Image 1 (cartoon, rainbow, N blue to C red):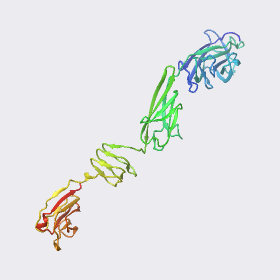
Image 2 (cartoon, rainbow, N blue to C red):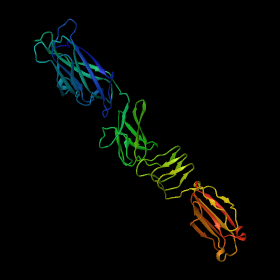
Image 3 (cartoon, rainbow, N blue to C red):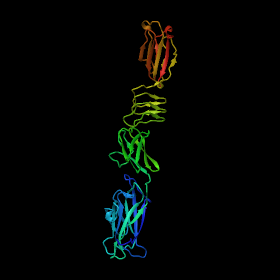
Image 4 (spheres, helix red, strand yellow):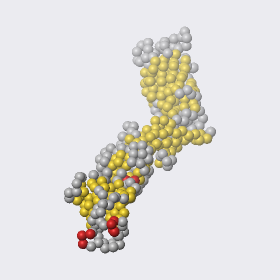
Length: 426
């Protein structure tokens, strides 16, 4: 050794101060070192060695968890190499191992003159378990002339460090076979891969109901297929424990299920189904307004429509269908009797004619009453003819819109025993 170093050294860092994480989650660090000659002096230098610890120093402090990257950002020098050396190899009694970064000028006469600032950069990841600060050991081989360069005493550059700021970001979803491609639309039987960036120590993933889907220290997880059957917002909670207690951060992401399974579906306005498979409802379907179905509507349970239910195709009901709203209230009809038959009653729309016969006597021969239903004008051939014979009974006769009906072959004694009701279809 031949005395103190001749060059001036100044440093800046990013971040400031440097952050030293845990050994399993180190923090990114960048050190910029500016080297210059004192004002008014000419200093020649043929080598600058910078040693940074690669394991925790004996007295504690920060260290690099992987080989750092070295580059020259100002001046015409080049980083020669990054080597691993023990403290003893670089003249230290300590047993700490170091990454040894060597910078040298090109092998060209005159390039060893430091007549403008040199700028070196070292980047890597830092960790620390005890203590604070990163100690860099610097050794230069310099002189006042090009032929008097000698190795100078090693000196320390100590840079302050702090615990990393707790962060959680880049919460993304994707397919397990394409984890780097963001995706938010899945089928119900798809697996969902979730990944995030954080320096937290413990993570929990919840579904929209607050059910825990994952917990652990990894920064990714895969949700099994069939777990999520409808649109869901995942919530990720990250935590880290320090000497000041436990801190939390949360992030959310919403995914869409293209073939969801819905327990309860309430439509307050209009529901339109598109596709060839129709709409299958295994539970209750409540429509407060209109429900328009152009395809097939299948209800495995009860289906109630308190407003209008319009079906342009097939409506298949495997449970019960309450369709009382399709019928008008029964209307009692009192047709005029003209000695042998009632007057003709015209149907303004489809419905059911209900005839109640309470006559307890007997009909003989040709005096048996008949119900005739005719098409259009005139009598012609009856579309429906029903014979009323014998004991009291109730008859239901379907009548279509535009048809007319009458009860024939009556006499005054038996006419009073008949009651007529009309149940129209809405």
